[in-house]
Image (cartoon, rainbow, N blue to C red; front, side, top):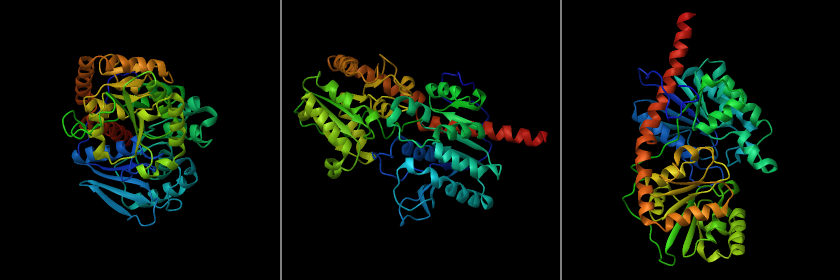
Amino acid sequence: MTSLDTSPGETGPMTPRPLSIALVSEHASPLAALGGVDAGGQNVHVARLAGALADRGHRVTVFTRRDAPDLPDRVPLRPGVEVHHVPAGPPEPISKDELPPHMGEFGRYMAREWRTRPPDVVHSHFWMSGVASLQATRGLRLPLLHTYHALGTVKRRHQREADTSPPQRIACEREVGMGCDRVIATCRDEVVELGRMRIPPDKVGVVPCGVDPEQFRPDGPVAERDGAARFRLIQLGRLVPRKGAAVAIAALSRLPDTELLIVGGPAPDLLDGDPEVRRLREVARQAGVADRVRFVGGMPSAEVPPLLRSADVVLCPADYEPFGIVPLEAMACGRPVVASAVGGQLDTVEDGVTGRLVPPRDPEALAAAVGDLLAAPERRAACGEAGRRRVLTRYGWARVAADTEAAYGTVLAARTAVTEVA
């Protein structure tokens, strides 16, 4: 597969035997509760990918940082998947931007583990995991694949002086891309960005993130609505400014008889003390829609599908979005999506078919697209049905795991060929 292939999925030889796979996810544990500042799509991706690879007969260990003193060294996640807590830095929650000084310790720990029990393949997630994994695999000559999930160049371009990333991030990301065997990008927009970073295009392939179409489906329980508004919009995700909740609130002022549920952030009883919630409540007050905006807080993943099914339209108005799992979850539930035309959403949302793509940071465009859908129930239903079909065809975890496995096979075959020649 070349970096210009526009279809999801890797090509390459299938792996001939069950593999021992190390997934490295330094800050995004598959055991973490979702909706916090540093807990979102990557946590879901790692957990679901690990499970889907196990379903294909592989043994998967997820290496993630110990962030509490009472965590067991190893925790079974499900049959075939184990979470291994790595002692790197203090055993307490730390912002991911403060983790780089501990990645050397993280890498040395994995190297010690792998000297006696080496995995067949290592797959790191996010740039700091890549740094630690590159350190651990170099001396042991283990094959390494890397998924960025987000790139520092994109974050700096959009956030500028608000970017809190460590200053070495971009240089480290390029080092990881050059040093690993293969980069698994999640969308075409990322491939273009990697080309600007001078990562060789023959090292890059695309495997998108996925969604569980059995957990997220059109039929099933639906969260109750109190009937105060005729229409319901939902925005789901981490409560950080780049996710565009302020844009959604501004758009709501142009959409009468409509409520907006903002899902994510801290637990419901901690919302009043959250700075972003306070900022957004003030935005809603100034826009005159405070009575139509409800902050739900973080919630267990099992409660998300019923809530999505209660929406007339799901909003994804991020300033930028490296991939974005929420559009897939909404589409899998048969709900139309209105998303900003950025990043991975350019791949997942088919404009005019599964929903609408609009310019980022444009409340008027967002309101117009949503208003058109709210005025046309048959169009909303058609978009929902098309979204469900698109998910089943392209984005189920079984397909994502098969394509990821094929990427592993490509790297292992290349390694074998080099060994045979030598």
